[in-house]
Image (tube, rainbow, N blue to C red):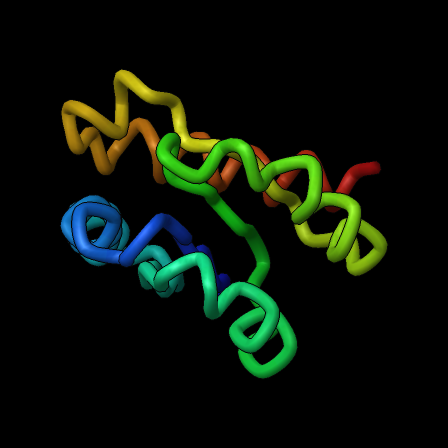
Amino acid sequence: MKKIYLFCSNGMSTSILASNMQDIANKHNLPIEVVAFPHNKLEEIINSKKPDCILLGPQVKYMYEETVELFGDRKIPISVINQEDYGMMNGEKVLKAAIKLIKTNKTS
């Protein structure tokens, strides 16, 4: 089971996107868990749940460099969700991007 975790300011709007992504994963029988969390839980979640991919909501993209600095050595792909896809709550595109990140990370 691959774990894709989304982080944003409060985890509210990102929860909707995570739910959309989970629906797509379930529809295609993909062994993926998609969950959203508030950004202040980032370190706790990474340490306890060991995600396979971390996606930051556009509203916390300022945290990208710091997140990579703190957790980049753990070989977890980290990215900022595309603003347009986030705004449209396009779970399919964001899920595809996350899967690609995970696959790319395995080959590097």
